[in-house]
Length: 306
Image 1 (cartoon, rainbow, N blue to C red):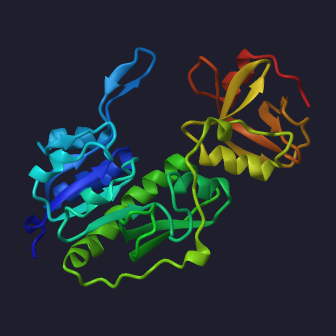
Image 2: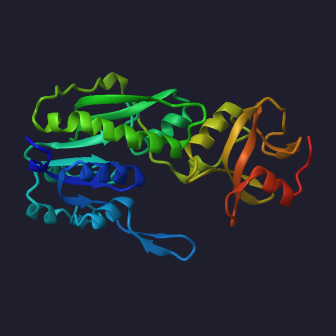
Image 3: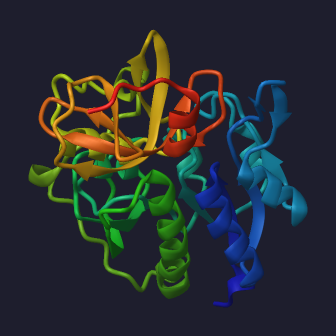
């Protein structure tokens, strides 16, 4: 079987998924369609913008579908005559009737080492929990979230400087290596499917607005640091300073003692106090403003010294 022999329906939405999609197109894989989330309003002007996967599909003239609720809207798929489904960060639960349309099966590149971190936010939750390792799992899609058998895994270290943005970039590249190595063999039935150990399952729930506020009076500096990394650059972890939301986008752990929940300055550096320890803030964003470096914040705001 050649790459061009396989008729693929691709499902994905964000930049990391678009990176894999375009890589496969350049490598000669054949796509009969792409499925992505609907266009969203972006920026202060609310400009309706297609997802990164839809943009790639349009550039390569791949038919693209953006159902509002795919569980209720998938009749269009019957006209595509695909052999296999590949999903990477699509963002909706795909109905079993659609999965069953693929004669060679439906598969997902999941952003964790399964069975750990099943669910919507595996990359963010792994960082927020202080994990030192994550990876990608090539798995069968079934009628239960991220519960199918696993065919192959690639692992990746989470470095102390990594945040959600940098890990997405690194996992995008890892996904291309995983697919290059294993996807054709998977389609040919040459890979062994290993059931997940249900006793080791953990979940990565969707990021909620309540996850974004840093409870600095309840969390120590390490816990706050991991929360900041897991939510940066978006949606961003925030604290209230003088009644305004201030997102902490980048920083490092510090041993300086700073009152919990307060910003203080010392030696032209900015610090955020936690329950124990502090964060030296390097980049932040005040509500209604663009992201800025800590030194620029110090130049424009009165901050009590330590």
